[in-house]
Image (cartoon, rainbow, N blue to C red; front, side):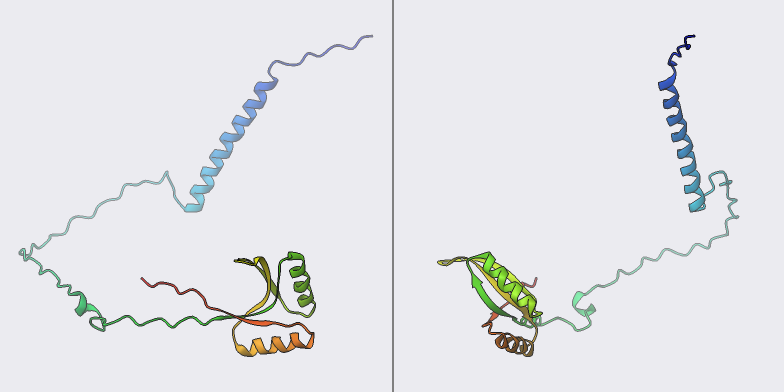
Length: 175
């Protein structure tokens, strides 16, 4: 016996659309309800407020107020400033340069050798006129000369020559 053939319904696409539409409406209503509950606003509460009876007001004669006197230099606590104090010059940054190489591979090798000693180095790449691109291996910046001396002694024990580099920070203009 042959099986009956089922035909696809024509309403298959519209039922999905109706479900999505109903879901969106229910979600929007729930979102508004949660927002009103969280803020404590009741849109259905009566907003009529009974105004109290006006109290009698005594009318004072119109007297013009004197305008306040703003003398800028008298208002300042120290009077007129004579001259702005100059900011102290920033301290120079101290680095120890362990090498400068044309090849970045050589610079990486020296940086790895310093890392094996427990020292953190950085590679600064610069275009030096007349010499080309140099990859400088530097340690620092150091805050005090004692730190520089301790690190220099440690590197000398491992036969790594270094050069002290003093870098002046750029001066910032004051307005």
